[in-house]
Each structure stands twice: as structure tokens, then as C-alpha cells.
Amino acid sequence: MGDVAREAKRWYWQRISAMVLALCVLVHLATIVYAVRSGLSAEALLARTRGSVAFAAFYTVFVAACAVHVPIGLAHVGEEWLGLARRTANGLAHAFAVLLAILGMTAVYAMVAA
Amino acid sequence: METSGASTGEADLAAAARSGPAPASERTAPGEGATLRVSIWRGRGEGAFVAYDVPRLASQTVLDVVTWVQRHREPSLAYRFACRVGMCGSCAMTVNGVARWTCRTHVAEVARDDRVEIAPLANLPRVKDLVTDMREFFDKWARAHGRFTGDRTRRDDFARVDPGSTARRAADAGIECIGCAVCYASCDVVTWRPDYLGPAALNRAWTLVNDERDTAQGARLRAVAGDAGCHSCHSLGSCTERCPKHIAPTGAIAGLKRLTARAAARGKL
Image 1 (spheres, each protein chain N blue to C red):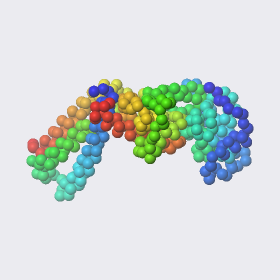
Image 2 (image 1 turned 90 degrees about the vertical axis):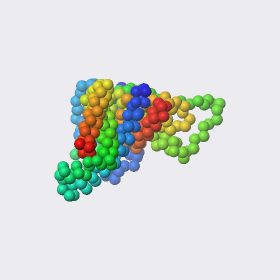
Image 3 (image 1 turned 135 degrees about the horizontal axis):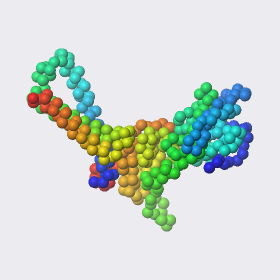
């Protein structure tokens, strides 16, 4: 795949992930408002999330969308504002994508299965 | 590079400036003896602002002010203009920090406390005083494949394009660009990323993408989809806000993003 097609697809993925994130953030905020109505405690939260397939599925999608969307934007910021070479910016962005995915999925695992 | 044009007196300048409908604030002539404090950028590369007192006239444009200074105070002041009626796109300058076409910008619209600061356009190399080197700006039109490529000859019949079609209306919306570079000078992405093609070149490409007679669509999409092409645009909208012809390059670039992404997804890029 050439550079031109890669750039176009990268924009496409950032746009798609932004749409997913917009929905996820709304659901996430609504969930927070709902969840804290009866007081916020670790026990209460874990009691609701442990073993919940819906919670695991939703936040897996959320984490995946973050891991796609954020690094693409950061690569642009690195190139434009920090003057990084494209290769360097992409390398750092890929590393950050892996970090986000690991941290996010660790958190999902801790809420659902640990 | 020095200015050219027929010599006119102040009365003629004022008359020329009256060619368009003036806003209500313009219709009242400034008080007799009123002056405008004008700071104009002087220099080649390195330089500084130099202040001049210029007589205020009714319906006076920023270009009138620069012309007055050149004819009465600084014969060596370099600036560009040609048509004086908003058609040629050669007189754009930075007025009080904002890129504008100076022949159609009334002093009354931009003066603050009877002061105006005039500088060359941003994002372009400075040649002398208010003159910038426009080569890179127009080279980018060529790099964006901004030329029409057809397959008809003079022996073929005219192409019949439906004026109401979506593509034709999209082309119409962007076709009146006069190449003044106000959008280019206003674009922060060009500042950050000097190889970015810029709003004018991409707008031109968009008008041709929507020209159903054009036969180089694949090459054009490849030209605008690269690293420095439409995907670099952050939709900041300065180009659309400041375009004196009320064209919306932001919309054109969004259209190119959609088309190139679709082509890439289909493996046609």
C-alpha cells in the first residue's frame, strides 16, 4: 500500500473511530451519572460489573476506538508541532496505541473478571 | 516589482474607491483634515514597520492608502495591484493582522483609533516591502493537479453538463477563486507544515474533481491525498472565514477527504 492510500485510510479510521467514540462517551457519561446515584464504592461497582458480558463488550469497543483514534492524532501533532520525522512520529504513535490498548484492556479485565 | 498604474490624484483615488456600495459608516465623510496613522512594513527579508500620516478620505480603501504613501512619501515602496475592483487577486496584504484584499477593504472597516497596520501576506517569502514571492503558492496548484485534462478535440461537439447536477453545483461553488492567497496566508496548517498544498490549490482540485469532462481524476486524487494533501487539513476554517469571494475551501477539502478515503477503501488510490 502506497503512502497516499495509507494516508487516506488513516483519515478514514480516525473518522470512523471518532464516530464510535462520540457514542461511547455519551453512554459512558450516562453510565457514570446512573452508577453514582446510590453512592460510589468499589464493592458496589464491582458487584455490578463482574461477569457482565455487556460491560466487557462495550468497554472493549471503547478501548479499541481510543487505541485507534488517539495515536493518529498524536502522530499529526508530533509532525506538525514538534517537527518529528514522519517515521519517528508513526513509531511513537504505534507504541502509544499498544500502551493504550494494554492499559485499557487491563482495566476492563479488572472490572469484569479479576 | 515596483507598483505600476496610471497616475491619479487624491480625488481620483477617492472616486475609484467609491465604485462599490459603501457600508453606512462610510457614507459620512471624515472630518476635514483628519489623518490616518498607517504603519507599513518596509524591507527585504529583515525590516520594520514605518509610520506615515495619510489624509482620510470618504470611502477610502486600504489600497488607496498604500498608493497615497507610495506617490507622496515613499516612491520606492513596493506593492502589487492591478484591477482595483476585486477581480485580479494581486493586492492581498495583512491588514491589522488579518489577510485581506486591500482594494475592496474600506479603511473605516479596519481602522482602530485611526490607525492601520499593513504588512505582506503571511506564509509566503517576502520579496520587498508588501510584495511576497507567490511561486510556491501557484506551484502547489500544479502539484494538486489543478489543470483541466480533457479528451475532446475542437472537432467534437460541446460537452453537455447538467447545470443542476450535484457535481456541477459543487464545482460552481468553488470556481470563482481569484488566486489572491488570502486563504493560504490565513491557514495555520501551512504555517506548521510548509509543504501542505493549502486551501486554494485543494479547492481548485475539488472543482476539477467535480468536472465530469475531466479525464485525470485518478491522478488528481493521488495528488491531493498524500502526506501534504487534504488529510493534513484540521478544518480550522480560517480560509472559509476570510475568503473575500465567500468560497468555502474547508468544504472542498472535506469533499476530497471523503472521495480519497472511498477510493483507498476500494483499492483505487
